[in-house]
Length: 421
RNA sequence: GGAGGAGUGCCCGAGUGGCUAAAGGGGACGGACUGUAAAUCCGUUGGCUAUGCCUACGUUGGUUCGAAUCCAACCUCCUCCA
Image 1 (cartoon, chains in turn green, blue):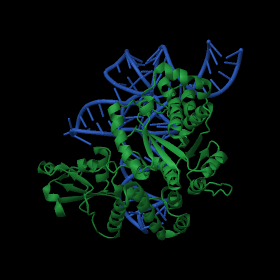
Image 2 (tube, helix red, strand yellow):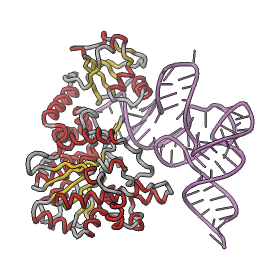
Image 3 (tube, helix red, strand yellow):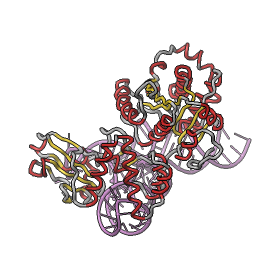
Image 4 (cartoon, protein in one colour):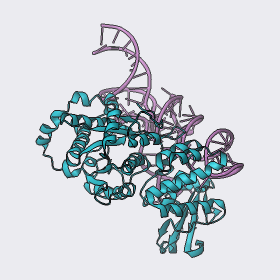
């Protein structure tokens, strides 16, 4: 196993050296061979994303950043959308089955995911990255044909030894054939990409190790040398899994989390994580990363702003990042307000009045009315910069501030500007 | 195959018939302090069309005016014996 972030002097390839230095490498199926292959010339590498949720979140950023670096260094990325595999559901390290998704839902999720992916990896031009849907081939298989061609290449004995399913089996929880076959499907994906596009590397989260190894082995039986690379599981300095906030995951898609909310997430990074995050999620030169990481005390706040602005620029675009930075500066330096609405509601609802709690929930600051009520009663909710602690408070047109807008904040850091039209 | 122990909220864990939406701790969120950090202190921590209703103590059924608590069956985990 490789220790993340340690510059490896023995490596020949620039790509692997960069990935290691950035802390994006956890495990590799054959590091030396991969290094040689990367050094011999451009390769094609892929990462797959199932459409299990409506948007990707920060956890998906690491494999995407890996592809981005590879592309920048002359290699070609492929992003696989799991239109086929999402119909099955990856059982890896889960103790219960995922709810089966409707095809319509999968299609909708894929469209959203696709948009985020396109920002991170350059799809344009003949040299651009490829975006493919594994339903393209998985949907075409006939059952017996599949069993004969691929089922014969896998033994149940070996499949049962993978850690990803072991805990489920040990706990005597049901693991259906459907789920059990997931790793075969992902292995077939890899082989299919190798055949179609000469793809030789799969990148994934560390929980994907078993699935990736299966693909590499399937390739070997077909006479191909394939490689697997996993990124580390990201934890914060507090030891918790990163990317969860009060009201859910940190989504990459602007409809699920506004660019400003996204920027805020990164701005609120704990001191101890700043250096690590700058390495992993920005493309600043290492010298700059090191300089920023060494800042002390309140000066580190500048590094956090740079971190937030850089990541936001990559995920949402430079313009959105600039706006978020300005908003952040304005909001926290004095009594300035958000300038652009983060939410909009129909003006007509004000005629009857909207409940404050309803508004807090609609802004995404609380998951239920009850939670909103507690926030209000705890004195954490401000309306037009005044604390409101009456949970029954109703909002009508008389409460609107300048430009018919309403500023709402929860805690010190979460703010919304609601426009009415 | 036999004997015993266990399964509680996001997690750990107390609770052996009504005072239990369930002690305590962790985590999370809000407040104070600060640097939109950490540490510390205080508060909150199932849902709802809300002086009430619904859901929840492995599963299903039963006893009872009333069950996390008693009974039965089942499922799972642990220990000891064979």
